[in-house]
Every structure is written in C-alpha cells, then in structure tokens.
Amino acid sequence: MIALIKRDLAIATRSGGAAMLGVLFFLAVVAVIPFGMGPDLNLLARIGPAILWIGALLASLLGLDRLFQADREDGSLDMLVMQDWLSLVLTLFVKSLAHWFATGLPLVLAAPLLGLLMNMSATSTGAVMLTLLVGTPAISFIGAVGAAVAVVLPRGGLLVSILILPLAIPILIFGVSAAYAAVTDPDPFWPPFMILSAIALFFAALGPVAAAAALKGASD
Amino acid sequence: MRGPMQAVATKLKGRRGDSVLFEDIGFTLGRGEALVITGPNGSGKSTLLRILAGLLGADSGTFSLLGDDGTALPVADYSHYLGHRNAMKRELKVSENLAFWQSFQGAESGEGMPIDEAIDQVGLTGVAHLPFGYLSAGQQRRIALARLLVSSRPLWLLDEPTAALDKRSDRLFADLVRAHLETGGLAIAATHQPLGLDSVRALELSGIHSTVSDGTWA
Image (tube, rainbow over all chains, first blue to last red; front, side, top):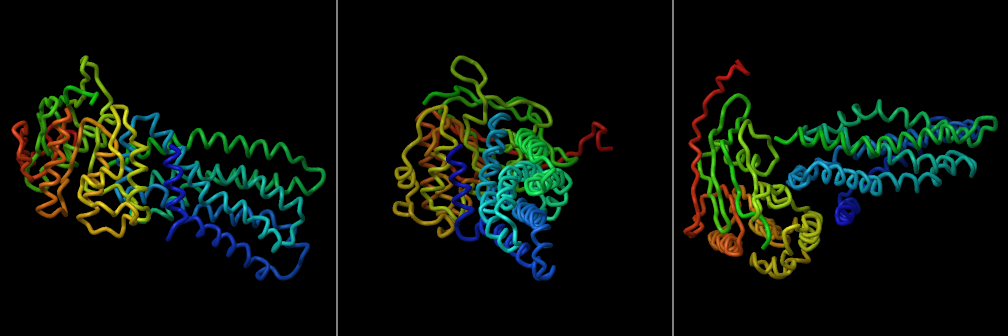
C-alpha cells in the first residue's frame, strides 16, 4: 500500500501531473477577487476566509475525475478491482489519501500566501489553514465516490463535480463557519470545527466502501 | 511453487446484453497444464477470461481454484490477469512500474524474480531506467509480460498476450509460458500462438450468438 502512495505521488508530480494544476487554479480564483471587488481592505478581510474556502473546494473538484480514469485507461484498474472486497476498500482509501497528498495538501500550504492577497489577519489565515487541513481530505474521500461512479464515462469530469458538490456543501458550511468563528468574538470555534472533523471521518469511512461498490459494479 | 492443484470451471455461461456468448463451458486444469481459448472476434474470449478473473459476474456457473488439500483459494490472490491494456504508467520508469506491481501483487504464493532478471527474461536488457512511454508497442507488451514474472502467482489469465509482438517475441512468450508450466503453474490464454506443448488443451468458442429465451429481455 505504501507502494501505491509512492506511485500515485510520483505520477502526480511528474510531467502533466495534477498536483500543480489545482494550486494554480486556486491561485487564479483567489487572485482575481481583489481586482473584481475593488481595493476595500476591510471588505476583503471580511470575505477572505469564504473566498479561500470556495477556491479550495473548486480546485479540489478539478482533478477528481482523473482519480480512477487514468488507471482505467491503462488497464491498472482491473488489477485493483480484481482484489477481494476488503483489500479493494483499503486500496481505495489509500488512493484517496494519495490524491489528497497530491492535490489537497498543496492547497492548504498555499493558503497563507493567498490570505495575504485578501488582507487577512494571521489568526484568520491560521484558522482557514486548520479548517482546510481537516476539510480537504473529506472532499477527496467523498470525491472518490463520484470518480468511481463516472469512471466509465469518457468525459465524466463535469458529472463528478455535480454529483459531489451537494455532498461537499456541508464541508464548506462548517469549514467557513469555523474559520469565521476564530476571528469574530462571541462565536465559538470548536462546535463547527468538531462537526467538520466528524464529516471528514465519516466520509473517510464511507467513501472507500461506496467507491468500491461503484467500481465493482462498473466493470464491463 | 505453492498454490492450487486445480482450476475448475463448471457450466459457465456468459452473455453480453441479451445475447448469450457461450454456455456450458467446463474444464479442469491441473498443474503444468494450459488451456488455449480460440474463436472468432466477438465470440466471448475476453468475456470468458474476465469472468474467470472475477472482473465480470458469470450468468451462471462457477470457477474456482482448489488447493492441494481441496480447499478453495481466492482466485484474485492466486492469478495474474493480463488484459488488452498493459497496466503500466507511461510517466514512470520501467523499473518503477515493475517495482510497484511486485510490491502490490506481492505473492501469497511465493517469491517472484528480481526486476532486472524479469526484464532480461523478456529480452529487453537495459531499458529499466527508461520511462515506459518511451518504449515501442511491442516492447511495452513485453514489459507487461514481465509483470507476471516479478510476483509469482500460479494461474495466468492471458488475453491476447502476443498482440503487437513480432515473431521472435512470440517464441519468447511461448518459452515464458512453458517455463511457468514447468514450475507447476497453470495458464489460460486467448491466443492463436501455438505454445508447442503437449499439455495444452484447446477450447473453441463458436461465436454463434443465441438470444436469451428465458423471457428476461422479452
């Protein structure tokens, strides 16, 4: 399984890899906001956490469709799906995790830089980073389900995003509210953050099982 | 080599959509035996192999691997499936590709050979450091065959293994299968390449499609 993480990371970081694509998209989305909004620093600081979260969500959805499709095109997916149920679920968990390392983690690391563009305070940026750190794995895990459902479709990218978006909305809501709670005084930070963590754990448990069922059913 | 004594298929029936591709397929293979599946295009050779590999559900019938003591073994852990596609990443080096599969399909049934040796065996010494995508179609196919060598599994399920191979590589492939059978392995292949072995049996799919008459689709 370590070998699988190493392989997927190597593919993501080499030529044509998906790792940089998400970060660049994230950068593009967030960087144009100040130009569109105008130079009102207070306004930017106020909407900053929400913009960062929306940008990260969209960037996470971007590369999802390739998660299994690349393996299907070269035939590797057969070897993964051949395994028994438990090994397949474990394999998909590991693949989702590798996908997060390649596409989600760079978004978390890029957040402080983009926070600067949005005139966000250090606390606010830290809160966004922390909530993204917990929230982006959830998107990868539940995104694997959409990627598995759409794996047989030649241009399933948009479908994956549409399938996954409703399920990702709670992640966005609690991620953003926890990030705001860290800077606005009376709001408590921990309840929304705990719910966000719970969603992440729930999706980590559910995602691989559902994706395994979809892939077993999709073999043609 | 540890592993199954027998591969037993009984009354397998497969269909695509509402046309039955084959039915009542049954065979028993012992150690060192091979089964060659032939038939015209579209007769269901690939479908049969995918059913055997567990990638497709059979309409009816069973396929199982039996160990020395008669217990059923999981087909997925004891067989190599080589489909039309090579299951290799173009971006990664040949050695990285093989190292991944060696580790991922690391055998419950014994050690495979080292990667360099497997590459030598398929006659491509010196390509280990090249990205897989740099190789020609025939070379890629041979590296895909090398995957069967780096982790040892008794049953080989091969779907048109010699596609894109030249005459010499055809013989090389036959030698690899022969060596596999001699160590007690089993092979089921959809190929027109004569393996030059006594223990090879043939199964011909007629390619005559009959429509299902059980009313499910009527």
